[in-house]
Length: 414
Image (cartoon, rainbow, N blue to C red; front, top):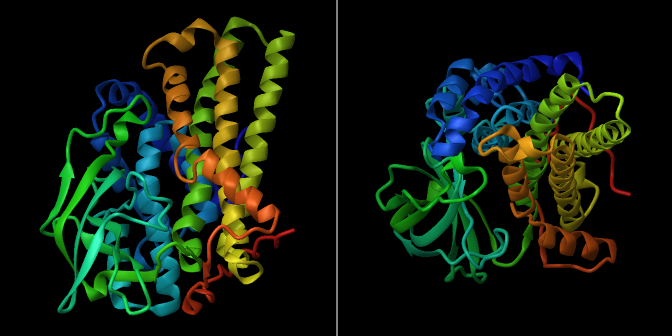
């Protein structure tokens, strides 16, 4: 079924649809070459899409997470690599916008205005081999006058081809209250930040060019540190920001990739005259159910994030479990849809670079993308049984007043 949204959100979906139509024509080329889609990003900048989550009074489109998940699904139906890359930026900008509405900080306002005009592109580099989901990191920070010096090695630097500012993390072992994780943002041209070109060689999402990044004696000023929390904790402020925005929007992107393949499948079935075949009808109905159920959960979770109920009405772990479940359902339903699509279209799915070939490679990355299926199952099951997976760190109080007054808060936990 066509994505349905309230009239207030039509402009976001229509913009994404227009861009996706263009990106769809380029997707095979970028996938086969493994080159970054700079042309697509130029279109995103020119159209104002990079400012989707910037407040209107600062020059942006004024969208929030509930708008973003709708738009990102449609954009991903055109090109999954482009949608996943811009997702990092839109998510971080949206988080910054919520904080700015509470604090009114001048530096945040300046960055948001620059994001609106496309001169600032945000991305993250937090993943590391052998370290679990932001709660730990092998990167190390040592204290110096006015800040820290950081050294470390990062993987999956999605957006590094276009980012102007990078969010990353390191452990400060000598913190007076024990080892703490530091979250910080720096301009990408800061001395010591090195993008390792040529390290991204994958079967799926090839055009994201998510290269490894090295931090070699990088100076991090005190004012660049946005958050500090004890190593190993489930941090409430990260639920408000990183996890709250990333999990529903990742689900939307991977679901959109599947929807793009499904929509093409429906067109192909109609051209073959297979509308009355029982297997085709049953499989199409199954796909509709998978897509619509994922959409509903993603939309509900996005509303809960914007309404703050995930951290005002429940524990950090309970809130984390809910956002992670939305991502898990979205990505696994996407895989299920693509698998059914391939059964329907048959041998055309084997054509290298086709929408079907790209989709079956790209959606499977969603099941590994943090939270992975295995990590998600551990968290959700532990939460159901009332077992703590880690100590909790409460969210920062100054972010609790940032509920979106345009829409009601999401439903509370069961």
